Image (cartoon, rainbow over all chains, first blue to last red):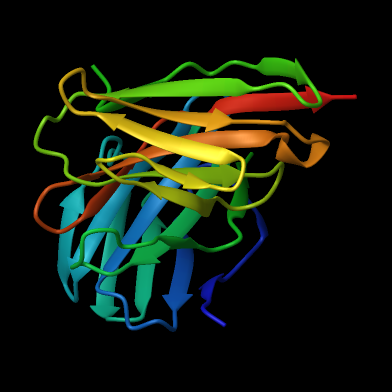
Length: 114
Length: 110
């Protein structure tokens, strides 16, 4: 059974804190993604990684950074959490090659910044 | 302009109805497209890929129109269990980056 696991389902952090969201996949996928999902806005890509130590900014990278030191793990870092980063965060992974690579998602982390 | 755009809905339809969603994409180089389904408070899951010639999976039919740069999803004989958000997805770039639309919400009522 394929699996993408996010470290927390719910998280409450204070404004200004440094926040780490972890994602691990067991499918040997090259690609990993971090999205945030807000009502009416759908899934917006924050960062994308296509290999170890390789990353690409998505549509809304401001206030975030990422780390991919191992193929199976992709971390999202909020350098200094702010209330407008309260959201649902979804991690996904997929194969980098092939015509129709299916993406598999973690269950999401609902982050509240107070 | 967003790379993938969808009508957010909601589409409210009775059981048994036929409903269609459209999605437009701006990157003419995109080669592959998908429909994902997301249930309330759940993660998105692949519903079906979209093939150039159109494809069918039971009550679901997906079409691609490259000239007009849109894809569509047709659901026939709607069931209550079809109530969900349907996300249109395009692959972008050489590394298969996945770009999602904002989703179209479908509510099927008795």
